[in-house]
Image (tube, rainbow, N blue to C red; front, top):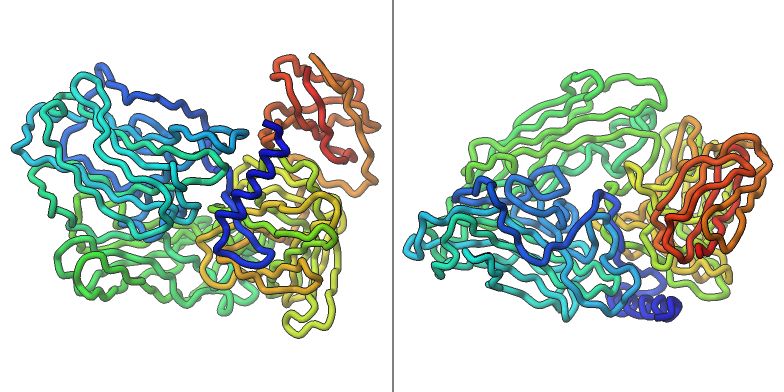
Length: 623
């Protein structure tokens, strides 16, 4: 199918699924998950594992670990994403997310907008049920939730559960169709009644069918239990557990430079850290005791600690917020520009438990680094502006400084688009005032970097860094940082990462009709001003010399590409496919060649950087 037609179909589908927002602000699926690494295979049959020691009952999984893949001692595959950001009010902290993204975080099919196929699967390790009979009343229970913080599974999507019998056959035991949006987690109770399942290597397997139309098609699964002597009414567990991560130590930012924090800690530090716990048992719980400790990880010094009591109305399914005062105390001293980490640990005490205690403890770092952030570093959706052909589109995020500082650049998290948006240039702006916002009579732009290219980055924090040629010195107070998309330049609908877990004001404004308007989208748009010491473009060193252009030849090419530029230094090169995935990179000198004979024929983009070299990526055709 023609890729232009695909892009139009994609845009129409996004407009359809984002009918809950109005005006020129729209949201779309993130279309990739850079947290996931490695290669995924998709077995169509849950395998028996010869020679492996089978698990025994009871089987319990609540996905409350801090690892992004399923626990290999319980599960055969790694296709689902273990997290605490895609689910809404889980039974306890963590869930398994099924979507249409593979373990590289990419769509299973990057081109078809109509394909419907098996996507993620989650297969238990063999479980020895040979000593049981139907009279032992074995039940498998689990909770599921469609959509969560992603996009809902549409009609044609489904979540299914299979049992593997003693002969290796796969039997569908349960399924739920798509077409439903976010709702509270629902519990399913399934009895094991057929003797065909009572062997030494029983397995069960969840799998989702996803319409591969660039929708995330999310299902979340949580709190899986398989045990004997249960009944259909056995729907509670003697367990009180955390259901979310603690809020940040900071009052508004999720991260900021430590010197900025130290300049006004009473204003920047939150008066309380909040978390949510849930009583999932049928037992009355009038109060839950807990403790908290905050440690400077650089020195090991305990900054504050204490106990708290959370009041509960008493019975199951009740969620309350825990609150702990955070005295400022004696804050450690560090040189400006130093990254500082405070470790925060929460514990629940004297609570009923299944015997699994990991969900009674929450560990989190409060990071002070060289950037200002409202987001938590993970994107659940994409944010974009619906632009008019003859008008610019601008996004501005409001920030504040507690003391004068220097803005060195901007880190931006882009939502993946297909085809790769190499033609969508944009500008970065720093403003000290926006017209009609906070009483300002006009826009005051103090700096801009222009004709920039969006990239997807697979580094630690998944942001792409744009270093400013000229640093911007700002006084203490409010400023705005954001982007401009130029009218008629073909850069409309540029996707930015959206942290959907952000609660409260997102501090964002947009301008598509020559007037600034407060954003109505829930979530933090993932742009981070970088402060303090010099920073560098991602993979490209910052320089102040006049940039020089480069070229690559021949085009089309079959086996080799030769680069021409004036610098005597080696330059970094990057070859990406149309999805934006970097498939070849390295360093090359002017006049030298790189080998591309192993690339599949098709269209690619080549970019070059380093020293005094700059320029837009160039499209090449591999024969």
